[in-house]
Length: 223
Length: 316
Image 1: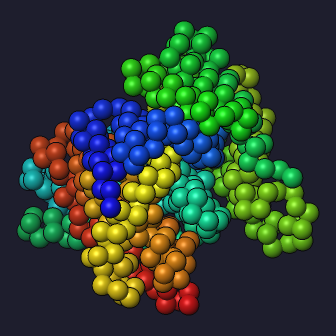
Image 2: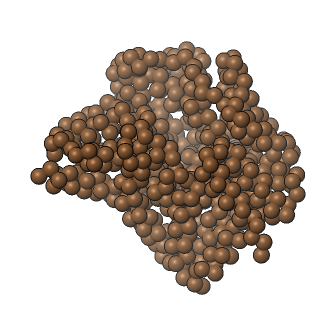
Image 3: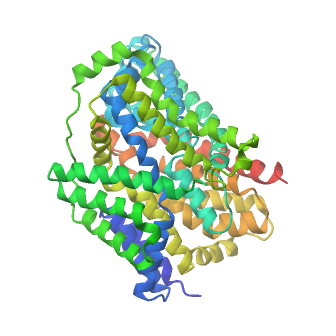
């Protein structure tokens, strides 16, 4: 068997590791893989063009940007902030659990840019979690403070990753559809996205348990 | 019958407007990039494979030389937004909710009533087409309700689009990479290696290798999107779906989520794991990953169980 096409995967890894532009890496890897498999140059470019063209529906979803941008113009992010702040005064455990649920639900409804690290975690979620933890447990040691901040960022990631796939018009769902369709298994986005729900529930249970475990641990350390 | 082609024309028009607005701002690279993408949407079905391939190379060349810049269209200030947000209240979420509601309710209505017999939509394309319809309804509702300047939705959309930049077409490009990998037989090579590792006839062990492969590949590449086409072609489709008769929807959807567990554990996924550590000024750049490992591993086990039960035990 000809193992040379595997070099294409190695190129992706090396290219990403060296921080080249990912589009550059992806296309370079596609060209190299095709050539190593014995296809001629024009045939590889044709295959790439055909595949890009067949998968246009993945990028169609950006047409939602004017709706989100317009609502941001009228304070959508500030509104999201107000919803989170309405649980002010709660413990760190309750606050982050609430944020996890809020992030999962909004991502599941297609509003995945409502949270995020620069927009929400740094200015809002992390300081509130820290303040709530200090209120219950007193002043935190530096290591514990870092854990609370890191847990805030982790909560944003978990909420996003395991909420967004419930929304069918998201790139990952459409990529799954595209891959299965090219092998002769036509699926609908909705068929796929309902199967993101069991994992989303598990993610909520596991991560909210871990948030509360951290809160309890801080309580023991303070005593 | 309404097909994807209608959506492509709609998206092509959106990107054409973004291209023209970029040109007006003298952002030539942005104008060329979004203009080419617009051309792909509007004309792609009529171009030869070679022309489409050259279009892809041109897109990548623009992105590769750093031709895409952030833009700064006129928008409201923080004060205005805070004031508007207080005045409008939670109703602000309504237009955003119109989009998923139209798509989901529309799909259910279409599939479970005699409407489907009208053949209004191309089969299995109705959800994404209804998503496009939802976007148009939401835009009209927001325009009538908020009465912004006429160009505001286009400019606000461009503000977000340019903050995403070339990454906007990365998923589509990775899907194309997957197709080239498939053509070159990469899936079969890895599948061959994997098949040697997996004892014959064990569905459970095959599920483990598939989900573990998704998580590990994602950790290496920093991105579940890049891992998915390879693992689906190597194990997911030939072994789990074809040999063992598993439910393809579960294997696809939950396989991807097993990859997301890998994203939580790798510094390669820099924007999720390393950037926030820097933003929060943490001493340990892996502090976020450390908090995520305890969630990712049990969650990965849940995904193994969901595929095993959902795609095999309950399905057969």
